[in-house]
Image 1 (cartoon, rainbow, N blue to C red):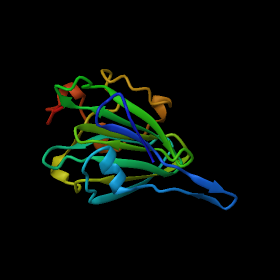
Image 2: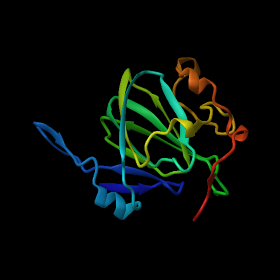
Image 3: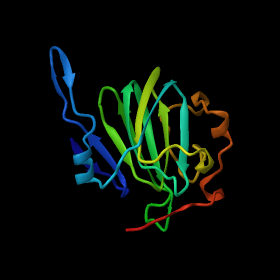
Length: 186
């Protein structure tokens, strides 16, 4: 696997080595030893999977400390725009984001450290989204920011009228309106 550091410290794109022939393909989608060697010491404790249709946007979500989560995301079927926003106070990239298309075709993965808000938007007819977390889901610590925060300026790649949100995500606030629980450390 190739681990590619992005312009925002704490976010990595992972590209597996895919071996294909007339029968299909094979690749390693996760190796803890390699992840630790390239990114750091993580122990994933929970896997999550969702099925969503075109235009479904889930996020931006995060959990407040001490229940914050690092995540490793991939798409098993379909295609999504996966986006992580730096919400670490004092970070030189605070409010900046990385957007990557993850698909079953390109087999890319995105690793996002603690201190980021995360969202994904389904670009294909349907998508199966899978991710690992290094902390359990904790209802009382969940929070988020609005997907359409004008200060973020994210191009979601589809018309806004096609975006579908949960009732919970419709109630999220702008980044400037929330109490930021993360501090940037070098």
